[in-house]
Amino acid sequence: MASPAPPPPTELTPLDKGIVAGLLIAEGSFGGDGRQPQVTLKMHVRHERLLRWLVERFPRTKLYGPYHHGDREFFQWMARGRALVQDVLPVLDEAAIADIDVHAAQRLATMRDRYADYIARVGRL
Image (cartoon, rainbow, N blue to C red):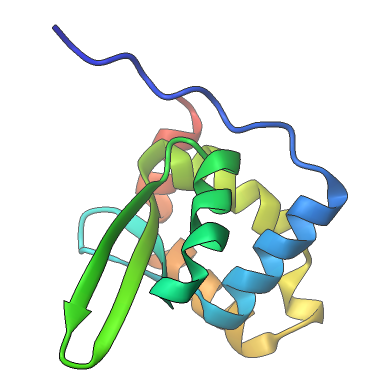
């Protein structure tokens, strides 16, 4: 028996959207695995509450960890598939990243270009 699908994202307030955009602009990694795009946010375990806050707002995203690697302890938040395309990317689009951080905007644009077909396909679902 399949587990129920996670609920859609909660309605984000303007403050929520600003926090999400700021976090991802400053700390996010925009990339993919060769098949699908992903946005990843790795943060020290002391930021666990913030990362769980993200999952509360984007229930289709995943939080992995904690990981212990050498002297580092961190969690990794990931948005892929519908969570990325339908939930997270619209928040980033609304943020007008290019006006705030050209480097982050270029990383996001590169991910969008590299995975354009996937993003278009999942966006239609």
